[in-house]
Amino acid sequence: MVKPWADAGYECLCVDMQHKGVSKVDNITFVGADVRDWLPPLSEYRIVFAFPPCTHLATSGARWFKDKGLSKLAEAIDIVDRCRLICEWTGAPYAIENPVSTLSTYWRKPDYTFNPYDFTAFELGDNYTKKTCLWTGGGFVMPPVNRAPDLDKPDNRILLAPDTANQSDIRSMTPKGFAQAVFLSNET
Image: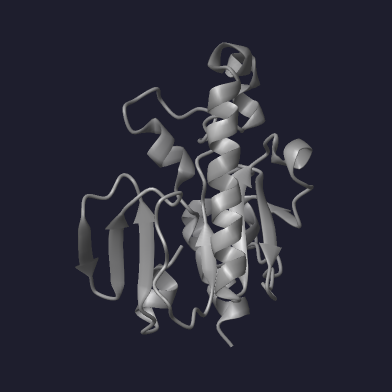
């Protein structure tokens, strides 16, 4: 999601427990941290994106909710709320992303939804379905749909992704076309 911003010269932070320590590649600093215990550095932020884990929220996994119990739901809601607080604290435009999930019940309806194929004019390889929700604020501008003409019907690769160790990483990757469209709509 931050690549178009980094390519344009913005210094970007990516905070995720999957990262180890702190490392930097070009204009992107990767920080290994739990957002519930992390404070962003004082700075003037241009835009903020949050991608809280959907494992215990996405309705696609509703059949497992009862077995997970209340503690997993509480943990997931706590992470989302911390993301919201950080986003609002920065005073910058922001978007919090999650697939169709229980957030609509526990928090509020999303401000926007999209599918990756909505932005194939920027990336032909994004011709697939995955209804994604955005909760936004601070003046975030949702880009207009921009589909490439004459493409085949979008495929369902996310639902059909093989059950592998990195399946959740594959399913959660931000579509390149959407990232570019958001940059173009919010950079000015």
